[in-house]
Image (tube, one colour):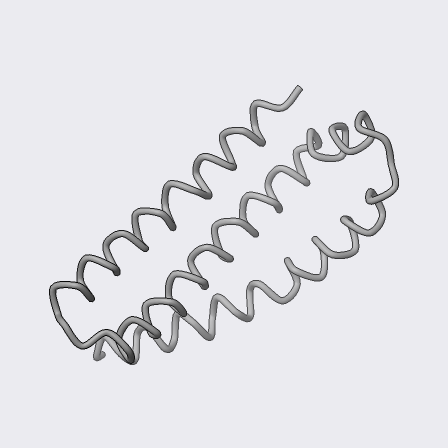
Length: 108
């Protein structure tokens, strides 16, 4: 399978996974929006919420990195700049959700 086909497949699969996660996130965000700090922290401390928020973050950063790399492929013509931009994008797509998940699991 060609890398372009794999990228397209990964985009479609990750978007399908993101749909129920996004709905779950929006519904829960609306329900905790007007609550006080302690209730928000207690919501985020539940194991189910930690797991679903973590999966949501991983897939959303994965999806955004794939989408932005497509923009790089289309609009950056210098191969060195394109490779550097893709490497920086992939690095941030790993570090940012990992950092956020570590903070989420260390909430008290």
